Length: 341
Image (cartoon, rainbow, N blue to C red; front, top):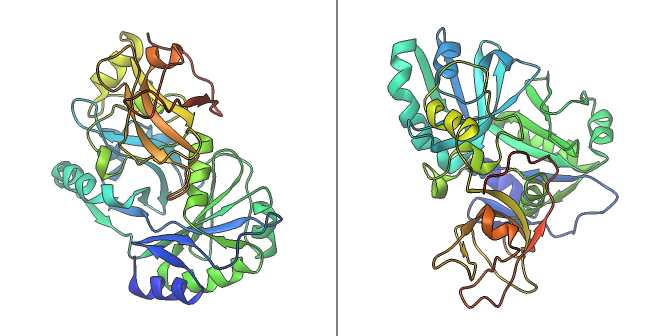
């Protein structure tokens, strides 16, 4: 996080845990959208005359469908199909911007840069040049209109005004605002007139509700895209040509049985959990999956977890090895098809 930006947020009353805003002094008003700083996320900037060809041959999404007005969900994989990162990507003039977990960026850039030299491309971490904000809630459109910014109706549709990129979030529950660092303070103050500043937990809650999990450093090169349900949220193109990891991803889709995937779960009352925490079933001698993300940094009640489908189908998943803290399966907002066994 930029020192000046963190000092500004602290002056607004932000309480921090590392780079993550936990809360502000006043609880958010239920009648207003929430305004959230997304510093744990970051931006990769890719430029150069061969950027399109580089990315089309490396990413799971179809770069031809990415424009200045339309972002896409995608992933970058190893040759074995394991995700190095997943992201939203959109164009900015002739360049590309990728929004992803900040602590996944270093390894992402190091790996992709091995190929960039052949395409005359530049790949940079621009997280210090931009600030990402989320405006979350049913009244988000009203907030943008009140501040003179455009609204959109379609998922991941992008509009640009005054160097801001405004992306309509999946679920039509708000917007991602990508703002130049030198404009961030003014826009925060402007948005705060119509929104309630809130901690990062509100962003986590949104992601868990939407069934969206980000690959961070903890989970890099561990899961294939289908285990994060990316085939159900338009994060994989099965019509484009070859890309790194495509053979594994396509084989899993058409020939294999996916034995585990992302589920939305409710934690037992008063239970504590952390990302990476194993989950258990009495029918197995070892864990049947792990928690990927939680809906609050300190008071979690729900989570996204990669779990063995068989254990879920048996309604037999627990948070502890003693099998005393059973988790409850919750619904996802998208349709799941072709379940494995």
